[in-house]
Amino acid sequence: MEIALAILALAGWAAAAWLWVQREASKQRAMAAEQAEQRATATFQALAAEALARNNQIFLELARESLAKYQAAAEKDLESRQAAIENIVKPLNEALAKFQVHYGQLGEQLRSLSAEQARLEAETARLAQALRSPSARGRWGEIQLRRVVELAGMLEYCDFVQQETRPGQEGWLRPDLIVRLPNQRQVVVDAKVPLKAYLEALEATDDDARAQKLREHALQLRTHVQRLSDRRYWDQLTPTPEFAVMFVPGEAFFAAALEQDPALIEFGVDRRVLIATPVTLIALLRAVAYGWREARLAESARQVSELGRVLYERLGTMCTHFEKLRRALDGAVEAYNQAIGSLETRVLAAARRFQELGAAGGDELPILGSIERAPRPLASSPQTGRQTTKPASGPDPVPQAE
Image (cartoon, rainbow, N blue to C red; front, side, top):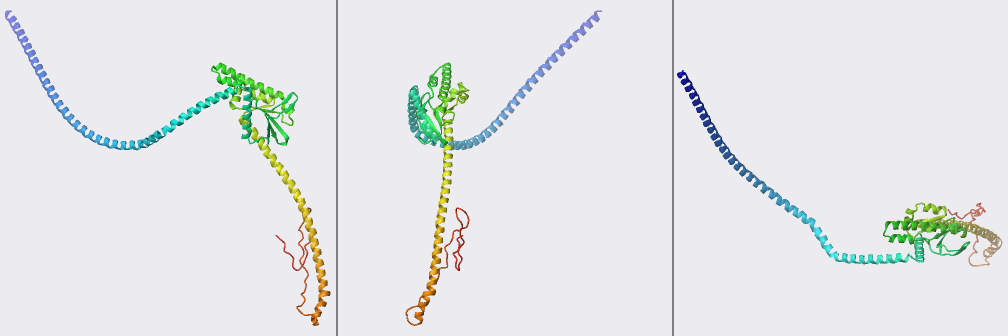
């Protein structure tokens, strides 16, 4: 039993020793493997460092070569770019130099323009102040009206009469313009348009106040249309068309009123009052001038026709006189031929016998011939168109003119 226990103890000790030996061997192998790994890692690191250093050297050399090529190309491109920039900048420098030369003149012109603008503003302010007076507004409207008439080619005291006063049923009528039309017709133009509310609207700083003044301006124009219609110029100044023209001396004045009162035109047409701005009045007067030209052409044509009729009658009278003269010449030729025939046969024949008998000396008496040409008659009479006489026949007739 003891032996068995001893054998078992010895076997356990042997197993433990074997395990310890195996463990130690494993530790040794692990240590060897770790050392080998460390050596391998060191070797790899050394090789990698060497390869990296070699690669870095090669990369640096390649980079230097590429950089040198790039620098050469860049320097060449930079030179071309500098030349191109110089070509671009050179005209700019020249223009800048010219600008600097003229800058002083430009500054002087700007200062002069500023002074002119200030003067214009002052003149505008004075004009606006002057237009507040009804008489000044009326006079300004009359001046604008005269300019419009001149632009339209309607000469003063020729096709229109300005400021003519006529008696009417309700007092004296004083239109600003009476445009004369062909056929003794006339068109009345009135230029007294109220502008006070419009001027106050321009000076208003509040939008509501400005809109209120513009509405007043439109109402004033409507009221003036009604007042002009009540005057009934077409009944007082005859003969006139059954309408009158209310001249508004500015496009902006009428546009502002029309914006507030779109029915203003229809309102005037219903009351026989046409609202005209400078542009529309010029068109109207140009139409009147065209009518005058057509009337003058028609009158000239009538006078030409009358002159042609009178000339034709006078030509007929003159042809009658020439026909009488031709007949008288024809009778004179016939009488001459009869006298020559009698002289030749009865007188000269006996006189030539003296020379034959030796009683007369000198040359022989000439033989007198008769006139065989007859006066050319008129081919036809201007009054009847028929041939008056036949041409006289003879051995040597006068050739007819083509």
